[in-house]
Length: 367
Image 1: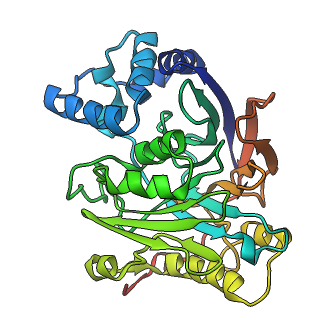
Image 2: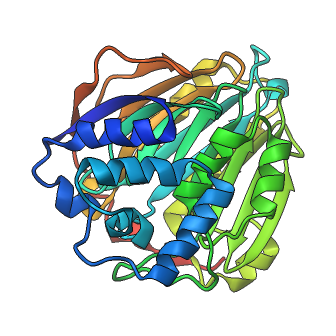
């Protein structure tokens, strides 16, 4: 067994003030400076390009980064965030279940995020930036978001598609310049009130990552956006559900993919099997998917190979609520929070019990 710490942060104020408060949050971490900063300045060209993109599509985030850097006595150009140094996408299982499929007539999104706890923020945030939509979701590299639900009922959840894009060994460099998923997700949560606005925003921004992006809103609308090496495809929910894991779900993208991990297809099949059956689903049936271990369910405990559940969420878009766990919900407590709420308890111990699924877990099959 391994333990880690799950954290909650309540971020409120102007963008600059939120940056300063996060600097105070990490001030006592002895590794903070090496985690967040580099002594070498980002080149002027790269810095101004990224800064301009962020200002256009996620306005306010640059001020937050400035407040954070100054809190440590650094220049914003020295932040690793601008150099994309921490981008390590993991595995994800996503599903939107629309009112016509639910007994209670509500809209839900389930989300299971698989990664190594050593490189996960393990940090849930409620973020109330002045002039932006309040949202609650997990952070990536502190300032980005991997998913979330905002006060208008828009839920955004990200899954990598194919080989992760980034600068680490084993990752593929981007083919096209553009924003990474963590900025895109946050931009949508802070600036869009429904699926229609979110689709428009993604279609009009430069996207540098390969992803399956699930969008759903409280009115029962849902869509999936697939991006791959500059291609963007949009699929509207034709049924009362929409699902995604970590492989291409559009023909144009599938033709470009050299293959897919078998466990991505298996997780997709688990979701599809549950949702395609005739009749309506109960909330207990949806929760069961997250509370059952792979290969029968979605919770994965392969932590030693950097592919275990680091957080699990069931979003209730109708009631603006999240049920979540730090780590696997089979090994840790399930909590509930309303969008925009503050939690009294800011830290919790998280347990990780590893399980190996054998070499077949990493088997690659044809797309």
